[in-house]
Each structure stands twice: as structure tokens, then as C-alpha cells.
Image (tube, rainbow, N blue to C red; front, side, top):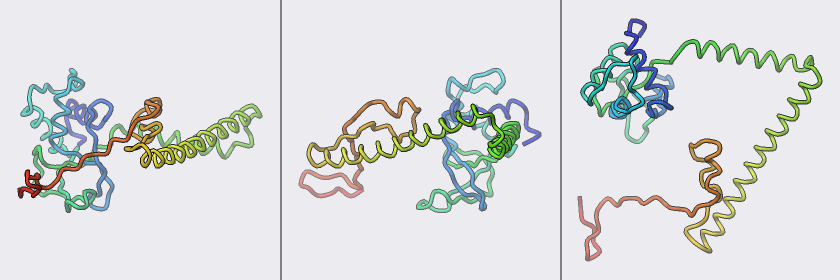
Length: 225
């Protein structure tokens, strides 16, 4: 990994940054270690996005070019090819002896990003601990400010707790009276931004449709696959 060309390292930085590449990795366990892994096809799609284009990265014209670049990520051990131990448990992974790139294979990250981020994070953690230990020595105005902030934080958590109970009660009442049920702040616990969590104010529940294993014939019998 240390001997990798700069442009390949920039590709690894791009793919590991979800906000840029959109490559969402899943959590898994490989050799007893928690890792994040993704599918090769998803990485190719990320390299074909407009956000990828930059002078500091290799040019990608089609899927073949993207696959060649991802082969270099495997070669320099930014990622390793792995397989799921079973289809039932998608978290347990095992190393694939054939370290090559294929679209349908899975790849676990070994690249941990910039070490400066880890160092600065450690320094920040130590600073927070020291600040907490030295709290009695803080000036009165800072101690009062910290108290107000902590009370505001606890109040907000209490508000979310009460809101979650109210929206659940409202849903249960409406699912029996005016189905399919009404959700207050439907995006409250979704993976969206803070403001978007409270937009829209309400929405009707839309249950996900599950596909049958066989299609239903006109006479009511199922057609076998």
C-alpha cells in the first residue's frame, strides 16, 4: 500500500469517502476483525460518476477502465477480495485465495484513510478528557455555559423520546381507524440530514410489497418457476 502510485491512492481516498463516491459499504467480520466491504459492481459505478473526474485520478472512459483501476487497488492491498461465509449471515466473511477483481465479488477495505485524521482525533480526545478533568478550574462563565448546553442536550433527547412515543401511538390509532396508518415526521429515524428528519410533517404508511415466489394464474393456482 505504501508503494502505491499517488493517483491510485487518490482513487482509494475517493471511494472511501461516501459523500463523494456514494459507495456505501456494509459491515462484516473478516478473520475476527471488523471491516467494511462492498461489491465490485458498486465500485465500478462509483468510478463512472461525474464526481470522480479529477486531474489527480486516472481517466475512466468505460467499465473496462474502471475494472483495471480497481485491479490496482487489489494489487496494492487497499482492498482484499473476500466471500460471504453463508447467505444467511452476511456479516461473516472469509478471504478468497484468488486475489483478482471481478464485478460480482466482494472486497473488504484495508485502507484506513489519512493517518493525520486518526492522530488529530486522538489529540482531540485527550483534550476533551483533560478539559473534563479540569472542569472545577474553569471560569464561572464557562461552567454556567456548559451546564446550559448539557441541559439543552438532555431536553432535546427527552423531546425525541416523547415524540417517538406520540408518533407510535398516532400510527397505531390510525392504522385501525383510517388504514394504512399515519406517521408523524416519517423521516425522523431515516438516514437523512437533521433538517430533513423533520420534513415532511406527516405521511401515510406505504408498506413494502413482497414478491411471491411464483406468479398467480387466472384460476388461482401458482405458476411454478
